[in-house]
Image 1: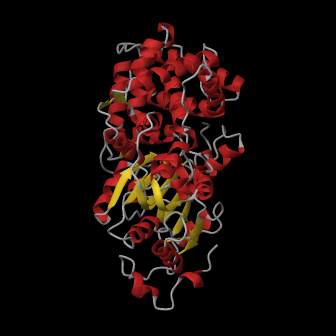
Image 2: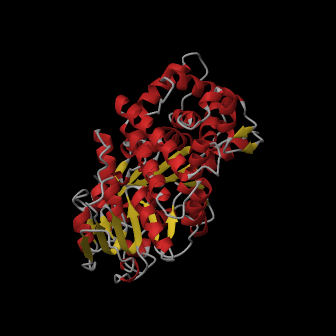
Image 3: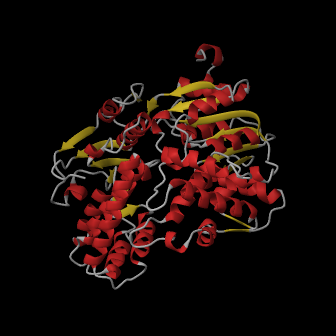
Length: 518
């Protein structure tokens, strides 16, 4: 670690760097980061705990750069990039990794269109008819797409006959559902689709935006400084992009304890890999300006160095032994604002949403589950909307029985967890008395996800980046997941618990329901 005395000048640092936008003086750790940016001697890794003001710090750091420099700020998603574009100086380009890859393609002369269903369309030609989805079979197209996406995230280039064996190696690590077909056959389909996709360059999907510029050997833009946000969630090809565009100092910020996207291809060791790749000097931001003291005390079970700010309120951690029957709890429990309600799994959220819907309460579910559930129902039923709900339930039970056996036999616990969550969600929806057939089931799904105000319900994964005065963790006993068996899986689970707890600013409620087994 750097000695702060060596970095902070003898004159007042506040005279040099001003104050926080709120008027509060910058902390010594933040001053040290600013000094490192000004001096440009080292590449910088900022290890920032939840609520530590990392965004404010890095935005301020950007302002200490020269207008003559070419600077890029790589954001994790478009919403963050758009917001940053409005807040940083004009000489700073705020982009997502995908937007930067797309720009590299355009600047190299590529002209085409973006189609998110590109691989789906290719697989319709590659897969045999009996592998395209039926009542009892897997959606092998989805499995192939997952496999190809992971291959691209690892910068795989499938140009030789050995591509299938490379696919098999990846598939064994990410738990691909085999179902009726053996893994080599699925990997062969994926490899075929990958090669076709690579040669179909007039149309790209979102994974292509990262992978194709490398495959086509495009010229990447060069920047004097590269700022990287949420570095703990990057995959290997995103690391390569940072390496390719950086012609000067790299400043990366993240939190090892908020690494929760390994299932998407993110590298669990991403921060340490980035630190090694660029020989970075690490700076800690360990003070949370978000959470009350009682919430910090709880979160420190997993992140011991988490520290409350001076003058932080005591706050409150409430233990509720059961999910309340009376929904007024979520609307009148002293909430300063309507609470953020989060859960490890979808089923408890859906059950709560159904109760709120039945009592005509306002609520919003933040999820992409609506589209995936509707698509899955259509796949299982072959779009037979008139099918009685009892017949659908029989098909659903048969599907899950086969999936469960296959996953248990092969040890694919992560895949079993995802399948269990989908199955439980559909069972809960089908138990509604108004659901008599597939059409009414799909109608209920649409109604459930139609809300745009009221308390926000979401999974912990979807709560990343959110905060609220009052947060309710629904069914905390579901963490760690009973399907988490490996060390990496367990670390991801406890990271999820840390993320969940640190969404709360003043009141955190842990709402258990040990009577229900999931």
